[in-house]
Length: 99
Figure 1 (cartoon, rainbow, N blue to C red):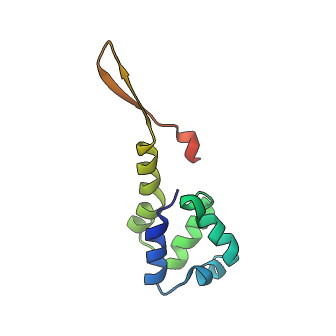
Figure 2 (spheres, rainbow, N blue to C red; figure 1 turned 45 degrees about the horizontal axis):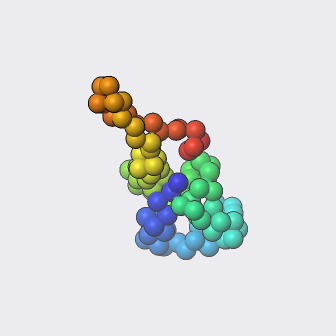
């Protein structure tokens, strides 16, 4: 998942439109729009790398847009269980969902 709102803000700040960005990374506008749907689930690592390069995003910006949002979303959707004997909480996060 991608923080699409932040990404679109950075696209505009860097003087691009989604259409011009798509052209710069070698995708059609329609394909890039589809990749942005559902919180960017269609964006591949290669797409993210190209977007970071073309927009000149810093490492911190790239992490915030493409990684931190993903980790935070996974944690929010984590299963929470309680071991009744030990009264200890555990979180189970499936990393395979995001691969």
